[in-house]
Amino acid sequence: MSKMLEEKICAVDFCEGAGVAELAQQNFCVKHFIELCYENLQRIDPRGQQLGRIPLDMASLRGFVEECSRRALDVALRCESLDNLQRGRLLDILLWAGELFLLLRAPNRGFADSVLHEHDPLLARLAARHF
Image 1 (cartoon, helix red, strand yellow):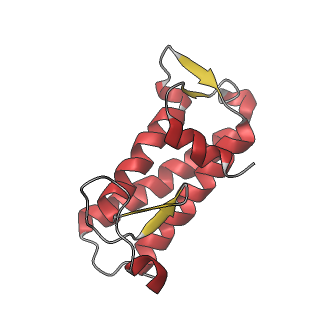
Image 2 (cartoon, helix red, strand yellow):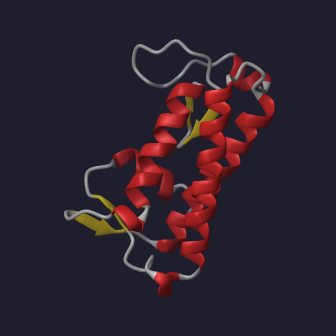
């Protein structure tokens, strides 16, 4: 990974793993980066919507999906210490983000009413960074 991230530790409390990816201006180790991506992609995926969600700007969603995808690709290509499970999960994130990006580009196919949990400050920060 870049020297800048090698010197940083994961932003998750009590984790001393090396920061390999930055989201919402915070560094995350591979494990927590993957967990964060999965959690937030699941929240914005309209195919698993639940009650109690609020709408979010489509452009912000696109921005988050793009950033998540770029960071996952960067980690997959630059981090030499990944095991096969981590590589598979990063590929899954890339594929999932690609599906969501296509849905975001064609809102008439069911993504126009995409929504997020009301009490998710991290995802709100991730999305807000783009606009």
